[in-house]
Image 1 (cartoon, one colour):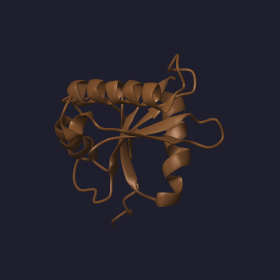
Image 2 (spheres, rainbow, N blue to C red):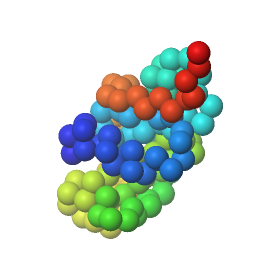
Image 3 (cartoon, rainbow, N blue to C red):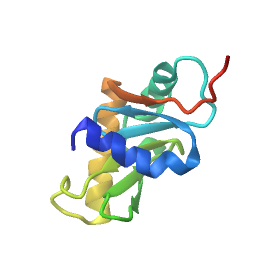
Image 4 (tube, one colour):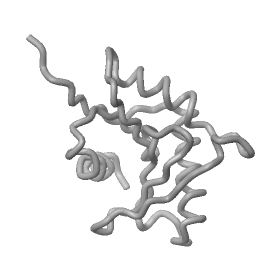
Length: 127
């Protein structure tokens, strides 16, 4: 899925929450419940710490949530605000285990590359 498609999926998922969020190249989103300063920097700090996978530790754990409207899946990890999107056409095997491992791998790539592709700043405007 291209960046524009990923941004639209995340907007559909997060619009009701009104929270700020940052999207990384491989589909991982960091939701910023307490946004402050440079949002890309704040999200990169979180993902740099909680994105890379360390098998046998909590960083290797994941959970898979199926999205409505054929939007794919969300793969969560050990940080509640770090979530990775997996599109329907990505995994060869649509089982939750295969989707979870695929999403965890994408989170690992994002957590090591830290390439921000979109920032959604939902903070109230200040004058």
